[in-house]
Length: 129
Image (cartoon, rainbow, N blue to C red; front, top):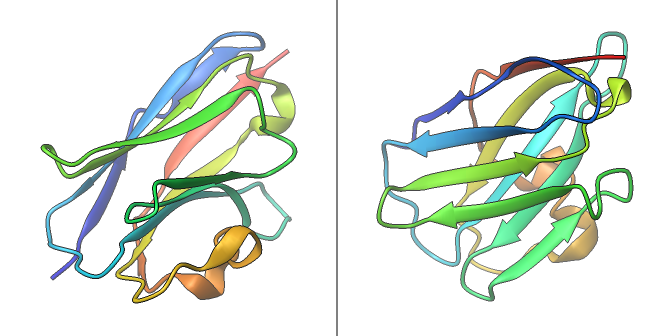
């Protein structure tokens, strides 16, 4: 049973950094796709960053390229999102998502909700100006 638990959210000023963590208490086989999504109030959930473990492929939304980095520690079964140079528009609930992925999702679908069957409960990130 895959269970995802996010942590690391908080309130920071613009320009500062945060690192989110997502711990998976279950086991994912196949190629393993994992991603971070976010949802701001009144807006749709959007993909932020994704990784396909088997191919070691990484994908980012244009809005976070160069500022956010997704990584994983397989020994700890944990996914990370390092967020630097945070902006007020990064304020949102951040969600971890995972899927076994028999095949890679690709650069577009990796950042779409439909590609993932497992979701965490989210962690809030608030960035003030």
